[in-house]
Image (cartoon, rainbow, N blue to C red; front, top):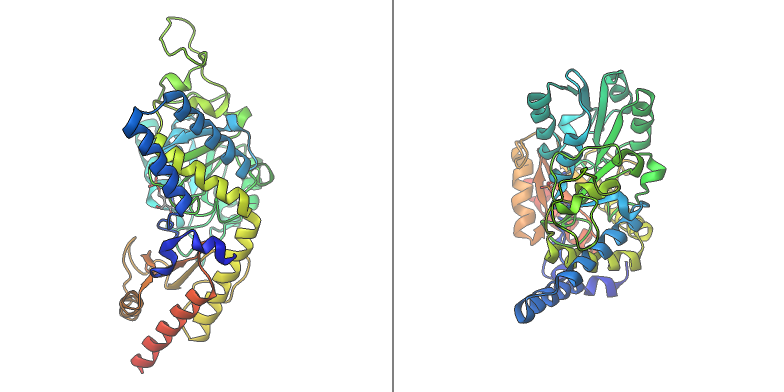
Amino acid sequence: MNPDIRALFPGADEQVYLDISARALVPEPVRAAIADHLRKRMLRGGDKDAMRAVVEETRSSFSGLIGARADEIAITKNVSEGLNLFGTSLPWEADDNVVLCPALEHPNNIYPWHNLARLRGIEVRTVASEDGHVPAEAMAAAMDERTRLVTIPSISFAPGFVTDVKGIVAAARRVGAVTLVDAAQSVGALRTDVEELGIDALAVATQKCLLAEYGFGFLYVRRELADTLVPAHLARFGVALGAHETEYVDDELRYALGALRFDIGNYNYLGAAAAGAALELLAEWQVDRIEAFVRRIAAFLADKLLDLGLPVAGGRPGPHLAHIVCVGKSGGGRHYSVDDPAMKSLWGHLRAAGIRLAIRNGTLRFSVGVYNNEDDVERVVEAAREWRNRQG
Ligand SMILES: Cc1ncc(COP(=O)(O)O)c(C=O)c1O
């Protein structure tokens, strides 16, 4: 992207920051929006109507980003809350099943299903990963008429490959199952159109590619489906009331329209201010341009690391590669560890050279943001070459 964009991220020059898949560097306008919110709270206590208006603007901007309508978006505090709210609202019957590929799921998209197995007697049907990919054919083969839900990551947290969402959605539709996408690693980095993908629900939080804060997220649920669901948690914002009514009336309980029924109590208004400012930036920069950029920088990094002889997951760049480049053996370690001593040593060397990256699932994970550039890649390659030469 252009240098003016990078200049909005003072952290980008402090280090080589390749860790957006953990959390993004926060841009200056987001910091300013947070400061402005706090100043108003500090001096005047804050205006609730104005704060709620910010939430609604944020909901609307987010819906625009993913090709949805505002009443298809619930406000959540993180990905897990979105996944759980949706999962618990489905009309499960004992022995229904959920199909997933746990080796490529974040633990937060595994636990909820085991909990539903305990609570509702459902079956958690697991599919093995194939070379770091969620295998569309094996997922389809695992589905049957008792499959109520299929859940997938749009991009896995490691090794970071793009999932064949459309292929898996088509198979789920054939058996009448609904689809839930953990989009923690893609929205904001990859163009996402929920209608084009044909998905039923999607959960994301704002601290990664949405360039804002922890504690704020979104749950998309397709309107026609949402209107049939019974939320497991309910408070006033999830009930169909007039704008200023909050009082309980002993009347027929009517849920708010669509996904709005999943909103619970008061919002994280500070998180909304941050997300609103970030979504404005993303709209200005345009997500397809962001996607083209981060894919190009990630491919450049992957090629250079492969040229040095490093084991880049997935090999040469292809359609599987988005903004995440992992080095090492996927699964060769636990969530935050890497077993291979050579990779551990490379990690230490890169960190000492001022490079910020992550260890995930046995790999060294580099993740590219809108604020990175080719020089960042060159610095990684230089440090990795130095390490390799020292190894002899
Ligand atoms: C794919 C994926 N899902 C979920 C999460 C986290 O979930 P939550 O926002 O609920 O903590 C992460 C990363 O933190 C992730 O990479």
